Image (cartoon, rainbow, N blue to C red; front, side, top):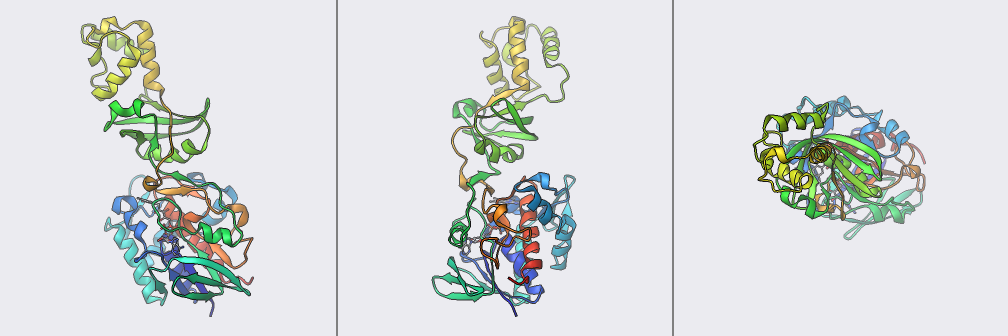
Length: 397
Ligand SMILES: Cc1cc2nc3c(=O)[nH]c(=O)nc-3n(C[C@H](O)[C@H](O)[C@H](O)COP(=O)(O)OP(=O)(O)OC[C@H]3O[C@@H](n4cnc5c(N)ncnc54)[C@H](O)[C@@H]3O)c2cc1C
């Protein structure tokens, strides 16, 4: 019987443990923390958005060929069927995000943990793996208290985002490189001066990330302003590139459906000439957001009548409503990031996630240089990569 050691009892490690054990492999799961699946419990605000019906390689950053191969093996329906086989009932919301019917991430962890127990997976918690070395055709997996021998090793140790332990050093010592790591799916810190007056406001907008003058990506949704950052899912999805690319700007279009914004403002001004400038955008934007924009566009007193708004001020205001710019500043916080962008590069892996550098060694989950958008895509990557490994780990080396 083949012995497999899995480093990391998170989403990918637990899923791989179940699937390998179902395939007749003797599995030891090593988790550094006192309990498995800590991060899983925090997912989806405690509800665990475990996959998405609209999974495709375009929802991820990473090597296209690897993504197509791995995602092609385990669809969102396969993920739901896998969890159904463990007893978990799921539902999809109108956007295709899949959650457990209980709305509790703990249910996802429970069914994985129970299956591991039922299938005889040996789970060793409080066991950070310090080193993995080659031992003939197999491996030695070294923890503080013991050394285990394994025919194959799967490193599913997650990423740097919100993690105390990682597996990057283990991978490096086995000959791998790790691409630069940046926080992803997180708020984007901007010049605090530009957002201080907006703290707490939420606005619907199309958000474009620019690098220099080049539009890199556009998302839409609710933008939330914090004391020093732009937040909200549509911003999260831009965070990795906002940090990685040079000279980036976030441009907010607050009226993406308006045909002619300047004409709309001129009509509005004509209808309410005696209203104070500070109230010109009342009903269109939250008061504090309107005040910031009006102060930028109009040099006079905000108590002036709307009739005092010059054509130039209206043009500036129209421009701001369609292209309100914020400049990322400083690095996003690892402790707020949901995932890690960067990791073990695709060029060092086969399309079954086996190491080219060290045959018999496999990787799954966030440690691989793949990261997905918000919406269940990262957990889907954890399941699909675990599935891929479990189906191929028997291969002779
Ligand atoms: C707040 C938050 C909310 C999220 N919500 C969602 C969501 O709703 N949907 C979604 O798709 N994604 C979500 N994610 C992302 C998702 O949680 C990760 O993509 C996923 O958990 C990655 O799975 P993994 O198994 O690779 O890593 P992890 O789940 O992080 O598991 C890795 C495990 O390995 C252990 N480990 C590390 N190093 C060692 C070592 N040397 N020895 C032994 N053990 C080790 C760690 O302690 C950890 O338990 C969220 C993330 C966060 C932080």
